[in-house]
Amino acid sequence: MFLIIRCPGCRTFGYVDRFQQWKLCPVCGEAIDVRQATAYMEVDEYQVAERIVTQLEEYLHRNRKKDFSPEEIRALREQYAQWIRTKA
Image (cartoon, rainbow, N blue to C red; front, side, top):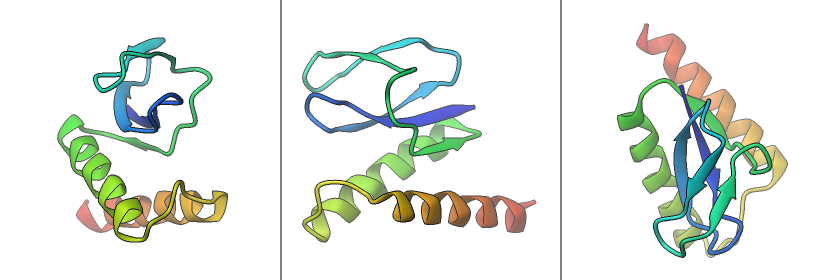
C-alpha cells in the first residue's frame, strides 16, 4: 500500500510506502514527516500511485487551483474505490 502525500514546502505530490515514517522531497529536499502529511489517497501499487500523482498535478495546473478541498479529496477517494471495485 502506498500513500499519496504532498510536500509542505514546495507542494509537490509524491507517494510513500504506508509504513515509511519520513520522505525526502525530490524537488526541494524537505524532510517530510509522513505521519503529519495529509494522505490524499491510499493505493495498492506504486505504478498506480505514479499515474495518480501525475494526474493530480495536471488537474491542479489545468484548473489553476492551489489544492483540493476536503470534499474533492473525499470524491477522489470514492472514485478510486469505485475503480477498484469495477477492476476486480
